[in-house]
Length: 360
Image 1: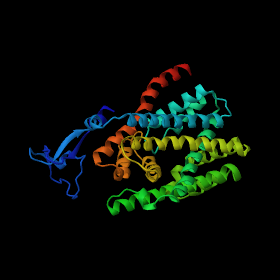
Image 2: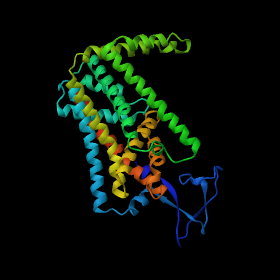
Image 3: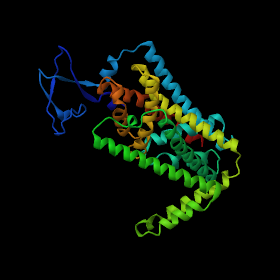
Image 4: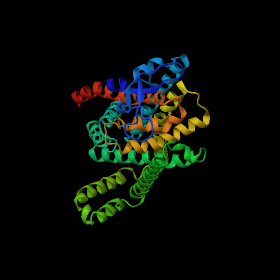
């Protein structure tokens, strides 16, 4: 967090102000890369100057309105975690108390913040639930259902949003080749999530052995043979999930999905609250910001870094830069977003995990 706050960026000076550096295009891409120090050389009459993100945060006009909307951003984070707690209580048939649910979700988020986006905290989640006296089989089933619901939220909401906003506007306004790559990447991710949703739905509710048969069939391919044991294990987990949840009434599934909708909406609205705290944002812009976060989510899912560090900030700056007056402002807003939505879980988890482990 200290490194992020002291990260240096370059900003173009305006008017009669004199800068301290000149741009030299060290990488030859013809673009000013404000975050690359090698792009700038000391020059007493230059038109760029160095600033840390802390300097930029200090220079922001912190009005009562901005403080109010930042408090609203924290409230959205609370809404996100409340939705997760409500969902975990529903999936365990209220076997977990609110206190237990709080510990489970906070440590789950802590694990997710420490692991790469592509890994997530699912293995830790099963361990936590099991320590809360939920059988390992049922814990596995609960984690599978949460994955299904999270993917279902993504698959259902994206088409709805595209009815109200311009399709091209949700992708970054960058070089055409980069935009095409991100567009292709996004729709590939969307297709994968859609296929996963369909297969999980069919396996859990209609054909319990479908996933296992499909996975074992694909592991007959020579270069996939080494994944055979994992494929069988995954298939058994889905069959177990089916036996645990197949007979649940429609009202149960509505509660689970609505709590998922609540938690993900709270997660996404954090950025909306941060943007309106410092920028003039209209209703259509709010929809656009909300939609762009689905693209961000796909990018963060495949991140190799803990908690998608670096990737998250880059995605934020790339996708939302057209809404801010300067690149440095959008980078600062990205830092505020991470200070609200990421770093708190590291501190909360550090405080709660030893106490929870000692108790269990």
